[in-house]
Length: 248
Image (tube, rainbow, N blue to C red):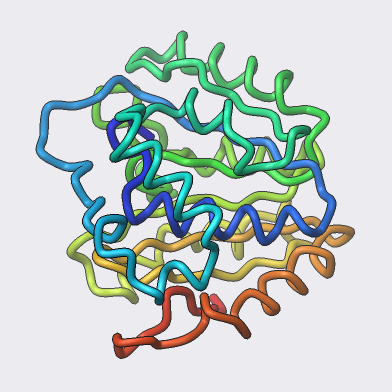
Protein backbone atom coordinates (compact mmCIF):
# COMPACT_ATOMS: atom_id res chain seq x y z
CA UNK A 1 0.00 0.00 0.00
CA UNK A 2 1.06 3.56 -0.69
CA UNK A 3 -0.63 6.62 0.77
CA UNK A 4 -1.33 8.06 -2.69
CA UNK A 5 -3.69 5.15 -3.48
CA UNK A 6 -6.02 6.07 -0.62
CA UNK A 7 -9.61 6.45 -1.79
CA UNK A 8 -9.18 4.99 -5.26
CA UNK A 9 -11.58 2.46 -6.72
CA UNK A 10 -9.60 -0.39 -5.19
CA UNK A 11 -10.00 1.16 -1.75
CA UNK A 12 -13.75 1.37 -2.23
CA UNK A 13 -13.90 -2.38 -2.79
CA UNK A 14 -11.38 -3.09 -0.03
CA UNK A 15 -13.18 -1.17 2.71
CA UNK A 16 -16.57 -2.28 1.49
CA UNK A 17 -15.45 -5.87 1.94
CA UNK A 18 -13.90 -5.29 5.36
CA UNK A 19 -16.93 -3.36 6.60
CA UNK A 20 -19.18 -6.24 5.64
CA UNK A 21 -16.98 -8.87 7.26
CA UNK A 22 -16.72 -6.74 10.41
CA UNK A 23 -20.36 -7.67 11.01
CA UNK A 24 -19.05 -11.08 12.08
CA UNK A 25 -17.73 -9.48 15.28
CA UNK A 26 -14.21 -10.79 14.67
CA UNK A 27 -11.47 -8.34 15.57
CA UNK A 28 -9.74 -7.17 12.39
CA UNK A 29 -6.07 -6.28 12.08
CA UNK A 30 -4.68 -4.48 9.04
CA UNK A 31 -1.06 -4.72 7.96
CA UNK A 32 -0.79 -2.05 5.28
CA UNK A 33 2.56 -3.35 3.97
CA UNK A 34 3.06 0.41 3.73
CA UNK A 35 5.84 1.71 1.48
CA UNK A 36 6.98 5.18 0.51
CA UNK A 37 5.03 6.68 -2.37
CA UNK A 38 6.54 5.93 -5.77
CA UNK A 39 6.88 8.33 -8.66
CA UNK A 40 4.62 6.69 -11.23
CA UNK A 41 1.29 8.20 -12.24
CA UNK A 42 -0.75 5.47 -10.56
CA UNK A 43 -3.18 6.35 -7.81
CA UNK A 44 -5.56 8.43 -9.93
CA UNK A 45 -8.49 5.98 -10.13
CA UNK A 46 -10.87 8.26 -8.25
CA UNK A 47 -13.24 9.34 -11.04
CA UNK A 48 -15.85 6.91 -9.70
CA UNK A 49 -16.32 9.28 -6.74
CA UNK A 50 -17.06 12.26 -8.98
CA UNK A 51 -19.55 10.22 -11.01
CA UNK A 52 -21.64 9.38 -7.91
CA UNK A 53 -23.08 6.39 -9.75
CA UNK A 54 -25.85 4.52 -7.93
CA UNK A 55 -24.05 1.27 -8.63
CA UNK A 56 -21.50 2.37 -6.04
CA UNK A 57 -23.69 4.44 -3.73
CA UNK A 58 -26.16 1.63 -3.16
CA UNK A 59 -23.36 -0.72 -2.11
CA UNK A 60 -22.27 1.46 0.83
CA UNK A 61 -23.29 5.12 0.76
CA UNK A 62 -21.51 5.92 4.05
CA UNK A 63 -18.22 4.55 2.72
CA UNK A 64 -18.67 6.33 -0.61
CA UNK A 65 -19.34 9.71 1.03
CA UNK A 66 -16.39 9.39 3.41
CA UNK A 67 -13.96 8.52 0.61
CA UNK A 68 -15.33 11.43 -1.43
CA UNK A 69 -14.66 13.70 1.54
CA UNK A 70 -11.10 12.36 1.98
CA UNK A 71 -10.18 12.66 -1.71
CA UNK A 72 -12.04 15.70 -3.01
CA UNK A 73 -12.71 17.88 0.02
CA UNK A 74 -9.89 17.25 2.49
CA UNK A 75 -7.22 16.04 0.05
CA UNK A 76 -6.07 13.77 2.87
CA UNK A 77 -5.05 10.61 1.04
CA UNK A 78 -3.16 8.76 3.76
CA UNK A 79 -3.69 5.53 5.64
CA UNK A 80 -3.56 7.55 8.87
CA UNK A 81 -6.69 9.34 7.71
CA UNK A 82 -8.39 5.96 7.21
CA UNK A 83 -7.26 4.81 10.64
CA UNK A 84 -8.70 7.97 12.23
CA UNK A 85 -12.06 7.54 10.48
CA UNK A 86 -15.00 5.44 11.60
CA UNK A 87 -14.96 3.29 8.47
CA UNK A 88 -13.81 0.24 10.42
CA UNK A 89 -14.78 -0.74 13.98
CA UNK A 90 -12.96 1.09 16.80
CA UNK A 91 -11.32 -2.14 17.99
CA UNK A 92 -9.54 -2.56 14.62
CA UNK A 93 -5.75 -2.63 14.91
CA UNK A 94 -3.48 -1.14 12.24
CA UNK A 95 0.18 -1.85 11.58
CA UNK A 96 1.58 1.07 9.60
CA UNK A 97 5.34 0.80 10.06
CA UNK A 98 7.03 1.54 6.72
CA UNK A 99 8.39 -1.51 4.90
CA UNK A 100 11.91 -1.05 3.51
CA UNK A 101 14.12 -3.03 1.11
CA UNK A 102 16.52 -4.59 3.59
CA UNK A 103 16.57 -8.23 4.76
CA UNK A 104 17.29 -7.58 8.44
CA UNK A 105 14.85 -4.68 8.52
CA UNK A 106 12.06 -6.70 6.94
CA UNK A 107 12.53 -9.61 9.32
CA UNK A 108 12.30 -7.22 12.29
CA UNK A 109 9.38 -5.40 10.66
CA UNK A 110 7.53 -8.70 10.30
CA UNK A 111 8.24 -9.91 13.85
CA UNK A 112 6.99 -6.58 15.17
CA UNK A 113 3.80 -7.03 13.15
CA UNK A 114 3.23 -10.47 14.70
CA UNK A 115 3.38 -8.92 18.16
CA UNK A 116 1.32 -5.86 17.31
CA UNK A 117 -1.53 -7.80 15.67
CA UNK A 118 -1.46 -10.83 17.98
CA UNK A 119 -4.89 -10.14 19.54
CA UNK A 120 -6.70 -9.95 16.19
CA UNK A 121 -8.71 -12.85 14.78
CA UNK A 122 -8.73 -11.79 11.14
CA UNK A 123 -5.79 -10.08 9.41
CA UNK A 124 -6.00 -8.10 6.19
CA UNK A 125 -2.66 -7.88 4.34
CA UNK A 126 -2.39 -5.07 1.81
CA UNK A 127 0.79 -5.40 -0.30
CA UNK A 128 1.28 -3.08 -3.28
CA UNK A 129 1.23 -5.91 -5.80
CA UNK A 130 0.30 -9.37 -4.59
CA UNK A 131 1.70 -12.56 -3.09
CA UNK A 132 5.17 -13.48 -4.33
CA UNK A 133 5.22 -16.71 -6.29
CA UNK A 134 6.21 -19.46 -3.88
CA UNK A 135 8.96 -20.83 -6.10
CA UNK A 136 10.82 -17.50 -6.19
CA UNK A 137 11.63 -17.47 -2.47
CA UNK A 138 11.94 -14.11 -0.70
CA UNK A 139 13.04 -10.81 -2.23
CA UNK A 140 14.49 -8.04 -0.14
CA UNK A 141 15.14 -5.54 -2.93
CA UNK A 142 13.02 -2.51 -3.87
CA UNK A 143 10.73 -4.69 -5.95
CA UNK A 144 10.29 -7.14 -3.08
CA UNK A 145 8.61 -4.62 -0.79
CA UNK A 146 5.61 -4.72 -3.12
CA UNK A 147 4.86 -8.33 -2.17
CA UNK A 148 3.63 -10.42 0.73
CA UNK A 149 5.74 -13.56 1.13
CA UNK A 150 4.08 -17.01 1.43
CA UNK A 151 6.18 -17.67 4.55
CA UNK A 152 4.77 -14.52 6.16
CA UNK A 153 1.23 -15.66 5.46
CA UNK A 154 2.04 -19.10 6.85
CA UNK A 155 3.52 -17.55 10.02
CA UNK A 156 0.40 -15.43 10.57
CA UNK A 157 -1.78 -18.50 10.05
CA UNK A 158 0.31 -20.60 12.45
CA UNK A 159 -0.15 -17.89 15.07
CA UNK A 160 -3.89 -18.58 14.85
CA UNK A 161 -5.05 -15.82 12.52
CA UNK A 162 -7.40 -16.05 9.59
CA UNK A 163 -6.29 -13.92 6.64
CA UNK A 164 -7.46 -11.94 3.66
CA UNK A 165 -4.64 -10.98 1.28
CA UNK A 166 -4.90 -8.31 -1.40
CA UNK A 167 -3.61 -9.18 -4.88
CA UNK A 168 -3.43 -6.83 -7.85
CA UNK A 169 -3.74 -8.56 -11.22
CA UNK A 170 -1.04 -8.36 -13.86
CA UNK A 171 -0.80 -9.21 -17.56
CA UNK A 172 -0.69 -12.97 -17.01
CA UNK A 173 -3.68 -15.04 -17.97
CA UNK A 174 -5.75 -15.96 -14.95
CA UNK A 175 -4.72 -19.61 -14.79
CA UNK A 176 -1.01 -18.72 -14.69
CA UNK A 177 -1.61 -15.89 -12.24
CA UNK A 178 -3.34 -18.25 -9.84
CA UNK A 179 -0.12 -20.26 -9.43
CA UNK A 180 0.88 -17.75 -6.73
CA UNK A 181 -1.92 -19.21 -4.58
CA UNK A 182 -0.79 -22.84 -4.89
CA UNK A 183 1.14 -22.71 -1.62
CA UNK A 184 -2.09 -22.80 0.41
CA UNK A 185 -2.90 -26.15 -1.19
CA UNK A 186 0.62 -27.51 -0.85
CA UNK A 187 1.79 -26.52 2.64
CA UNK A 188 0.70 -28.86 5.48
CA UNK A 189 0.13 -25.82 7.70
CA UNK A 190 -2.99 -25.03 5.67
CA UNK A 191 -4.48 -28.54 5.62
CA UNK A 192 -7.51 -27.47 7.66
CA UNK A 193 -7.87 -24.00 6.17
CA UNK A 194 -10.85 -22.84 4.15
CA UNK A 195 -9.56 -20.86 1.18
CA UNK A 196 -11.23 -19.14 -1.73
CA UNK A 197 -10.95 -15.91 -3.76
CA UNK A 198 -13.07 -12.85 -4.24
CA UNK A 199 -12.50 -11.09 -7.55
CA UNK A 200 -13.11 -7.32 -7.68
CA UNK A 201 -13.84 -6.28 -11.26
CA UNK A 202 -13.89 -2.51 -11.41
CA UNK A 203 -11.32 -0.74 -13.64
CA UNK A 204 -8.39 -2.98 -12.67
CA UNK A 205 -8.99 -6.55 -11.49
CA UNK A 206 -8.05 -7.35 -7.91
CA UNK A 207 -8.19 -10.67 -6.09
CA UNK A 208 -8.67 -11.19 -2.37
CA UNK A 209 -7.33 -14.51 -1.09
CA UNK A 210 -9.16 -15.82 1.98
CA UNK A 211 -7.26 -18.26 4.19
CA UNK A 212 -9.56 -18.99 7.11
CA UNK A 213 -9.06 -20.91 10.32
CA UNK A 214 -11.66 -23.68 10.81
CA UNK A 215 -13.20 -21.84 13.76
CA UNK A 216 -13.61 -18.61 11.76
CA UNK A 217 -14.64 -19.94 8.36
CA UNK A 218 -18.41 -20.10 8.88
CA UNK A 219 -18.57 -16.71 10.58
CA UNK A 220 -16.68 -15.02 7.75
CA UNK A 221 -18.13 -16.85 4.78
CA UNK A 222 -21.74 -16.24 5.77
CA UNK A 223 -21.13 -12.49 5.47
CA UNK A 224 -19.23 -12.84 2.21
CA UNK A 225 -22.16 -14.76 0.74
CA UNK A 226 -24.64 -12.24 2.14
CA UNK A 227 -22.67 -9.38 0.58
CA UNK A 228 -22.75 -11.06 -2.83
CA UNK A 229 -26.54 -11.38 -2.68
CA UNK A 230 -26.87 -7.60 -2.47
CA UNK A 231 -25.64 -4.60 -4.54
CA UNK A 232 -22.00 -5.72 -4.39
CA UNK A 233 -22.97 -8.84 -6.34
CA UNK A 234 -25.09 -7.17 -9.04
CA UNK A 235 -23.87 -6.61 -12.59
CA UNK A 236 -25.27 -3.06 -12.86
CA UNK A 237 -24.11 -1.59 -16.21
CA UNK A 238 -21.19 -4.02 -16.53
CA UNK A 239 -20.95 -7.63 -17.67
CA UNK A 240 -19.58 -8.69 -14.28
CA UNK A 241 -20.58 -7.65 -10.75
CA UNK A 242 -18.33 -5.66 -8.45
CA UNK A 243 -17.39 -8.83 -6.55
CA UNK A 244 -17.62 -12.50 -7.45
CA UNK A 245 -16.52 -15.57 -5.52
CA UNK A 246 -14.09 -18.08 -6.99
CA UNK A 247 -12.92 -21.45 -5.71
CA UNK A 248 -9.27 -22.44 -6.07
